[in-house]
Image (cartoon, rainbow over all chains, first blue to last red; front, side):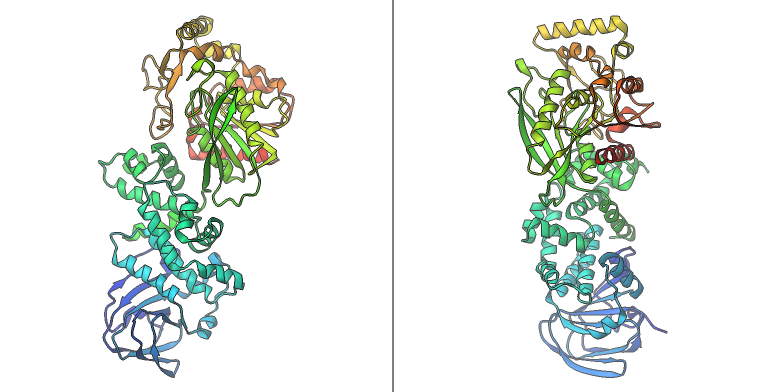
Length: 292
Length: 313
């Protein structure tokens, strides 16, 4: 009986996304962060894909037994080990670890890859590329970890976007892409996404244009728009609207706060623009929503 | 974060993915010596290729940030560029001759729409062979007159058109005595250099053009900061003697109308169409009020679908 990784970790994760129930990218992954003293994990067969991202500055010795084969190697910063679901795997590490672990539900990842990226993801592809170095993907993982750590600062819409950044960057490792598309995608790193999402958060109450965001990312507006949509699933301005509505809903919990004030605080031109946008997205006016 | 928030997040993003977003640019153009302020609407991330365009105009007393903006965005979502503007004497645009403001002048507004068509034809983002006009409420009559005989324009659409004739004017404005009284008021106001009253007020208010609350009075709807909320009594005569329902025969362009029996004077549409000999599409929706057409998302969507389909024919 394949087990879940959470069942047998020798130490508790410092942070975990398990408490979150959601759909789309964030729903098919769990994110955990460990700084664990030397220890081991017994061999088991697991039902989830396991992505191990090494953040530790100092290379340290680790052993990974996989389907009967033992690998003893030095684990370097930014190295990533992928263990597909169904593989019998066990670990032993000899130095203090500093890792982010992302586990993925196989069926849902395959559905996501097919529906969102138009790619067929086969388990064998994961088997064939078990380890690689990718500072950008680690950076995406750090973005998720930090989002979990700063729970009170993170919006669910932003977390979903960050989850998609991570997942899309991971999956594109396994897809067939034209070299020029690969180069373009690679030029738009997790750090760029992080800056863009940060800009949106910092400028919530102001007009945000595509040019503003492209400037923050350091690429042309047309390339930025396409890359953002390919990764996040929304165009930049559609995403900004989702974030504005989400934050407005949060502010509306304070029943004493006027809708007009909330509209301006969330960057809507006026209360009517807010009311109409809200109804388009949510299906009710803010007033109806508040009284419901 | 809690579970509901995260589930809602993905739903929010899926919902917004269905709503096209626009980029806007403020532009100015001239008519009869005055400068008009307008807005060009393009799809988010537009690559600069030419697009068919719709010039969108709004109701009496309105500014471009009201129903014109709503429909402009809908048109962009359906593959067009769009252009809105403030008429002379309103919003951010210059004055009518004699420094007159807030007077509802059919002749001036019709002339402004013609100037807007000529202006958009010069824009690099616009396919000058595919210029369309969309008139909402009172501007429907002005739009018809601006399009009639105008080779620059391809097709015309009207939403919730206010199309009156002499009979309907008397029916709405208190009979021949009521109309005569308003015309006298108009002349007195003109002689006095203008007399400004609020355009909108709560139900039953006095000294207000529209004492009915609703769209123009509600901050959630049309009472946006840009709205002048003013009416110049000097405009009554021009308005009351304007009979666009009689002008169907002037128009030869393909026409689509979306209206409702529940909206303003549907008889005006019938009168207009009885004189129109060209190609017409009429969609009469049920239980959609005049104000619903201005901003209610479901009704706006249906009206915009019909109009956009017509413009693409």
